Image (tube, rainbow, N blue to C red; front, side):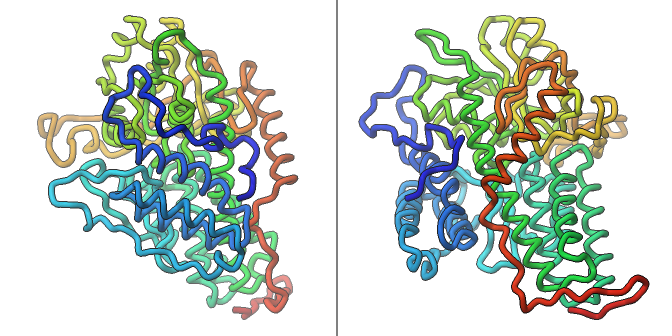
Length: 502
């Protein structure tokens, strides 16, 4: 098997001895099989899938096997490991026939779904993306079909999928799927379709900088190959490859983030490391490895004693429903608290560091994230606790000077006045429901990125990190960006003319 990309967490490179005694603070009944599944899936498979022959097929195969593992992680892990071994033979990759995926209906009656999961996977064909409906977790595992940018925009807007990195990846695939269905349209009709779809995606979650970054990236590629002058089949192929490249890069980048993040964590003596997190920043919200929660799980799988304080993250309860669920599947000790209990927990000396994600980072380091992050940063400063933002650089917008310029999404009042349809406030109560708030850069100890740990002044540090990322990606291009077949002729259309190429 080829070496993992630079920056892949050391925890993904070395297997834990199976007979290692449980460390202090971990429940004795921790599920070893699921920990093994996480390690193999997040490390040895996902991070290597796109470095071998048949990259796109290997990634689809991996996602199918991950789905199969949801209720049977031990056999699922074995299947993934066998699949990875088979990739050493290119013919085996081309001839592989993935096993049928486990579906929500296979969950036993009355049982909550279990197993570590990514937020989306490809279906049996190239024209459908199956996205976990995160509104239904942890009680049910239900997958929603995304076949177009319109479907993707609805999934983002309705919170079927959330978390900035995952939002960006689903949006990219949705736009690519629309390019596929529009490949036979007249060129200028196709351009209007793509532009309208791009605008709808960006409007679905305006605070997520990486969403606009991903959509703009696909549209830039569309223009690079000729825009309306390009063959419709070429447009569909190039946009799909760019979407797959975004997902692949996220996996590599999150692995690098985990490496840098683990090195940044304090190392208390003779007791577990106590971390506090807000929102959901694991694989469900990030795709790939995860961001802030990826650092937590990387530390856990490096056999560092870790305990996580998880706040509810009202009003959508991402912490209670999703973060706690992911930590449970990975065997990471954790305790759920109300959002308002954060000050009490910190004042008791029970927190060594706070780790959060980011929906958007301004040029000066001001950071927008799920609402409730700002007061958490204020509390951390009051109690002298390091406050770390853990985020890929795709969430940085150099054109946004500061937090005052970041658009804050206002969501429906019913998300605040009701929980799963049950009223928790009197009828007619007025409610304001901002989805995010902005933490000033002065309250942030460090921003952990795929290019290292950045410290104030954040402006020049972010610019330098973005430059380093561009240089690294130029030296290590994604294996998904392939050449357009020469038989797909680029038909040049005179100014003011209207072409008819497919």
